[in-house]
Amino acid sequence: MGVLFDNIPQNIRVPFFYGEFRPGGTPYSSQTRLLLVGQMLSTGEATANSPILVTDTAVDALFGVGSMLSGMYRTARLNAPAHEIWALPLADAGPGVAATGTLTIADPAVTQAQSMTIYIAGERIRIPVLTTDDEDTTATMLAAAINALPHLPVTAVVGSGENTHIVTLTARHKGTLGNAIMIDFGTITEDGLLAKEKITVVAMASGATDPDLTTPFASLGDQEYDWIASAYGSADALGDASDLLNDINGRWSWAKQLYGHYIGVSTATVGDLSTLGNGRNDPHASVFPCRKFRSPPWLVAAAVGARAARHLSAPGSSAELSRPLQTLELMSIKGPLLQGDILKLSEKQTLLYDGISTYFVQRDGKVCIERLVTTYQTNAWGDADATYLDVNTMAQSMFGIRHLRAKLTSTHGRKALADTNPSRNPGIVTVKDIRDTLVHGYQELVDSGVFEGIEIFARDIVVERDQADANRINAHLPLDHVNQLRILAVAAVNHMQRQAA
Image (tube, rainbow, N blue to C red):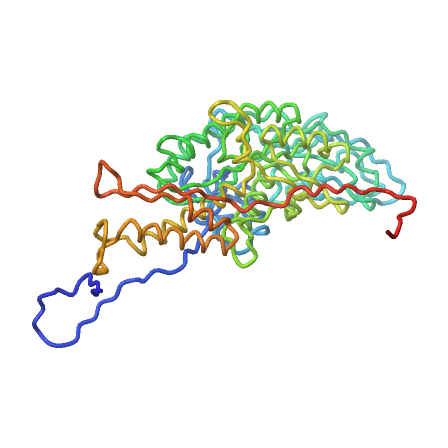
């Protein structure tokens, strides 16, 4: 067996010692990037439609205080404390309209000083109300309290003339997402009933025209973004995501091999979600429902995307990549205030068969992922197909193929190809060598809990030299994914008395 050199020439005659270095290859390790897609304010320093790495200290300067992306980053960081987070900032659409709502104050007429409490986007606003305060004074104080919270997604102004008891709320961003900003009373008992009795709410509405995603997505280049958490879950947005990921030259194509998964959110009703899901069939996109959530949809998207990035990045010693996301809490996310607005079992069953993910809410109000699925439902013939139902399968595919690619390139990246190598020349690789490398790499993935069935894989793998191109090797890899424990059905049989024998 010879020794392989990259640089030291064979015919060197000058004495004595010469050394060269080259990497010997290390086990594959993934560096998963989370990309947040949302709107920035005009006060932000970032360039719209251009992806940028985000840090804690720069987020407000980049996107503007109170911006959608500023809130998304903070929520994502809570759910993925150590992950690399990027953002794709979008400017408000030129023809867009900002959502508005109103708070009409009736004369408080309190006999003793009290607190008046409302919640906007899940954030508490509390003001004192004195016995001498009238509706105009109360409206002014309430507007001031709202504007004193710069990270709220709305600004407030008091009306003029005969309307000085009316507070008008305006979303900081143009677009439909402002319609989902919730205004609530009485989240906790200590809030009292004063606000509910004295404030008439007109919910946020009339927001229109979200940014188009085509141009921003075109700016992503060849950078890898494994998880794309987006504030937009409409049919149009999902279509743009499908073009990005599924196109013949998309990020999952053989030519790009960049991969990635899109997670959008929707505040639609169950019926509309069902229609939305049945209109899609994309293994690289998920839709997470958040109707009547007190937290705005863009924060929900950030939390779900961060959880996916954190737990589906690498297998680790606990096979985390293959474990289901069920029961993972979405940190800082507030779900529906009313029990009647939380998804029911029958609704979840419908949604999961229509390509829509589900959540559940614990008794203490914590919102948790229940099942994160893709919108893929049928094969090319229109027959039901659950191959790509769960997002874990796509995460395993991304990690597994990158692992095998790294294994092959580090071992055989620059070698001659021959049918046999009887002298064991290190500069020559054979079909058997490549097959052995693939089997060994698959064994590593089995040991990591990504794939299973090494014996069957070794039996069924096909590695052969292309008959038309002598410089090409073709391989068939039968990947057997590790599954998730999702359903545990128990038949409990009741007996009045069991016999010992």
